[in-house]
Length: 229
Image 1 (cartoon, rainbow, N blue to C red):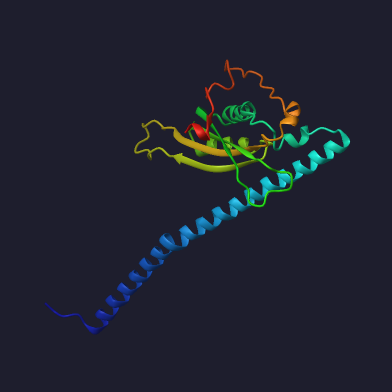
Image 2: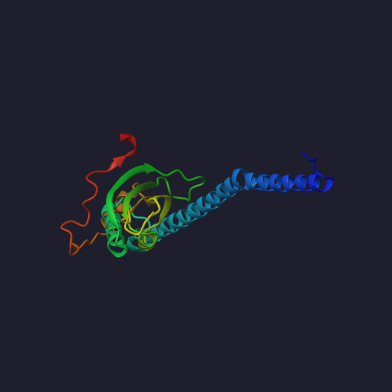
């Protein structure tokens, strides 16, 4: 058995060094850089979402003061942040998204809770949030995107909490049937339950029955409140 030459040893050492360097780079990216970047992106999104909520609340507070002075109406502002949870309006938007995306909504649940804001705007004493969780079945990612796009058309102030997709296994032959993917989308919509005097001006939900459904909001039979968990 012949021993390696000096050139072969140097080549092997160089190859091992390159492999080690690549492994170190991959380790640094997936275990250090990627998690930090994701956390940073989530923090930026959270700050942006909270900024949108604060802006809407400040605008509503200013509009409420102006309404008190001029005997105007709060209805335009309540389209953004109503004084009632208005689950029916959210369900109607989910129904529209289901029909236009060609997906299938399996279930919708609601959870009410308080929304804590650091340094809240003046005259904003209490803000509540309506967490909506939609359990969806779709054939393709395009249908999922269409569904999300339709939800984003909602005029009301909302924040996407999470989107989880359980993709089907990859097809192994042409005869296999395409399995639908399961998706859960959760988003928060906000309301001012403390402004009881403005409840008569809360937006009304006009929900015409769709062509192929007897009830456009059949998914949820009740509402889950935070203290009932």
